[in-house]
Length: 263
Image (cartoon, rainbow, N blue to C red):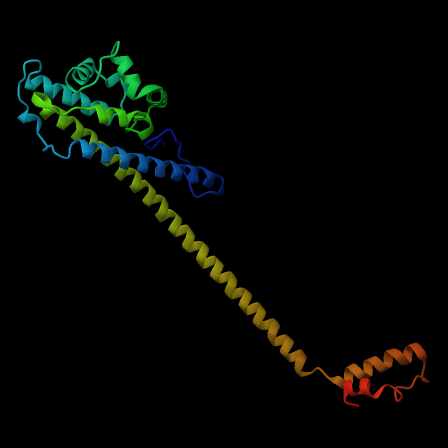
């Protein structure tokens, strides 16, 4: 299964063999969310003084009718929602961007596309077609987003469609951020369940160890209770008599040493 990127998801993400994959995916999500927050903030700054205009409110201009504006917005929406696919980057979008939004013209729309989305997005969509999965606007695919948003002009007779295009971009970026956070939350919930099971197992092991140590302590206490000085003295005497015969006398032992056994 593919989710939001080129990463393949094993069915059992908790399996030991897949943990490295999961750590990699979590880092990818974190990086994606960080980039998305920056992108969203940049678009918000660009549109901070703009009210949201519905497509039905678009007005005619000398070079672009209201219907043409709505057509461009519809194409732009499809382009954004499908991960900035070059196949959806139409001539109408390109013409509007370089004629009415403050960008310089390129040799063609392919050159413009390469300037802001480039080879990564192309490779991503090629893999998507080959593996038959859909692509969301992955942050890395919009690799030159800072320059794109900075140059995007919202002005004059094109203020309505310009603001609407930025609103579409912002909404999709926010939606993607929410999906990534939701995925991260799912990983956390799975990890929390796993962590609780590990906690229970560790607690059980500690309790078993405590019981084992308690039994060992009881055995030691019982041994201590029957421990006798006389037995140790007798064993020691027997050892020396065995070595040196019955003639070995313990009566002449240094009194200080004898005191050790309270003789």
